Amino acid sequence: MLNYAVEHRLLDPLVPRGLELDRFHSVAYLSVVSFLFLKTRVFGIPFPFHRNFEEVNLRFYVRYRAAEGWRRGVVFVREIVPRRAIATLARRFYGEPYSAFPMTHTIERAAAQLRCRYEWRRNGRREFVSASAMGEPEPIASGSLEEFITEHYWGYTARGEHCTQYQVEHPRWRVWRATAARFEADVASLYGAEFSGSLMAPPASAFIAEGSPVIVRRGSPLNLTAAATE
Image (cartoon, rainbow, N blue to C red; front, top):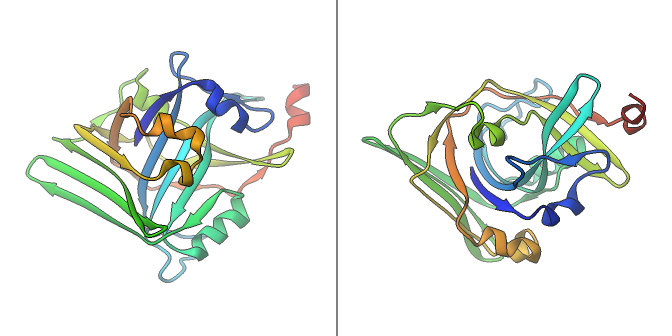
């Protein structure tokens, strides 16, 4: 997870109606996140040859005031996976901005060092995100930036004037703080020229999360009328 401090004006136009930008100590963050899906099931069904695959996404953080209090979640700018069927399914059921490109990854442990790299090929060019760390993962400290980045358990997707929400469930992760991290891509054509300045600079923070079993609940419309009257 490579995290970039950005001006809120960059993200404000992308915040779905009824939500607001979430900040950490008054700072908005944009994250490049890469990870593996393993043993994936869709509505309980394992689809052959589509259970283990990479994903790289660009996301930022929002919150929504529900009846029980704040729901903290993420909005995706773009998500990359290696297979068209996965991208099509995600667009169909979650409305998420998925694209499919050939992808590979490497995760290496050598002595006390951990190295991770996720790579994809787009427009004849090889692009990647990578990070390395030392030692063993540690619990996430309360009040830390790592907590802010990882403890968002809702996804929100704008669909015209409407918004879809879905809940994500996983235990609190342990993390390695990265000793080195890189993101190499044609940012302007991948995400838009407005993101170039932010994502071509060094990240404000980078870490590797241990991961865990994850449940992604089916999406549902966000009832903004009910929220406005609560």
